[in-house]
Image 1 (tube, helix red, strand yellow):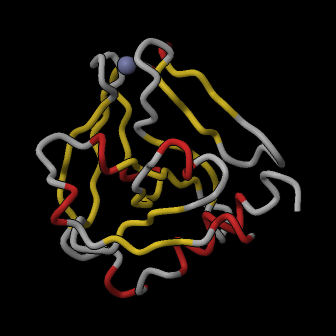
Image 2 (tube, helix red, strand yellow; image 1 turned 30 degrees about the vertical axis):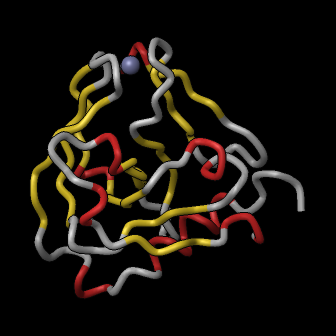
Length: 143
Ligand SMILES: [Zn+2]
């Protein structure tokens, strides 16, 4: 299967794997950003839910650990102009990265119902020890 054909399925699978009733519990406000500090955002997310470690062609190389939130829970407040949008395959997902430091703090795409979603790289959150988070592997490579 050509690179990228599974990207939407990836997003859908990851979102659907989360228990529906648990998705909105334990929401907390966390801030995050890229390494150089030009890209900054706030997000409301539940850090008790399992995060996604994907082995697809891009996640495998960049090592992101992802948590998914609807667009209404995400606020980019600095650095929009610093972001470069990388797309491949079917180009359904925006793999954004800081053009100065190269870090990928989040990606953007659509969920199963067409809703705008953000995939937050939880490694880019302030004051969050990723070793304490639950992580589930996701076999994006096989899609
Ligand atoms: Zn940066």
